Each structure stands twice: as C-alpha cells, then as structure tokens.
Length: 118
Image (cartoon, rainbow, N blue to C red):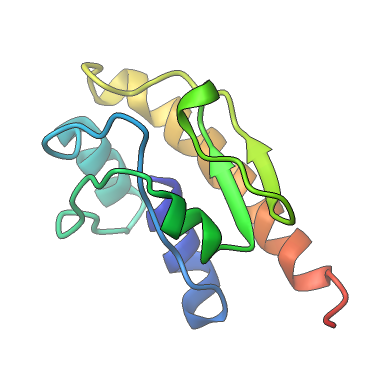
C-alpha cells in the first residue's frame, strides 16, 4: 500500500521499490480493495523479497517491522513504520491501516521534497 501511495502521490519525482523480508505469495485482496477505494490500482504488483541490492540502490529505506531481517547499510535514510500487518484482515480492518500509511507517505514526500540537493 505504501508503494502504491508513493507512486501515485509523487509521480515520477520519486522512484519506488517495494519488497518485504518475508513476502507473501500474493497481495492481500483486502489491501487491493482498500487501495481501489482510494483510487489506486495495485493489482499488477507482486510481492518480492527485499535484497541488499535494492537497499544499496535506495536513498530512503522504509521498513514496517522487519527488524533484523532487513539489510542495514550506512548512508541510507531509514524509517520504521510500525503498522499492524493487514495480512488476513478484511477491508474494515485494512482501511485504517491504509489511511495511516497514506499520512506517513505524504510526510515522507514532503521530507524528500524539502531536503537540500547536493
């Protein structure tokens, strides 16, 4: 959901990569439905494993509770967003998680947009 919001709200200003420490075999259908309600289609996305290469290629690394399973490299901007896991939850439980993620994504976009450029 975070990647969907980031791609939708930032457009081509920010390159988005999405991966997880223990990715499921498919995206949670309730998350797909909740994002559709917000006007964002994430049906084409597929869960992927987070790799050290993906972290190396990123300036910002946003984790959602992966703890020690996520690669940590110097020089990256790390943020951990401790949201409830939407896995196995229905749309009514996923909507508040979706809305909280959107708020964090909007804050991240503002932070990135206001950072001085080297």
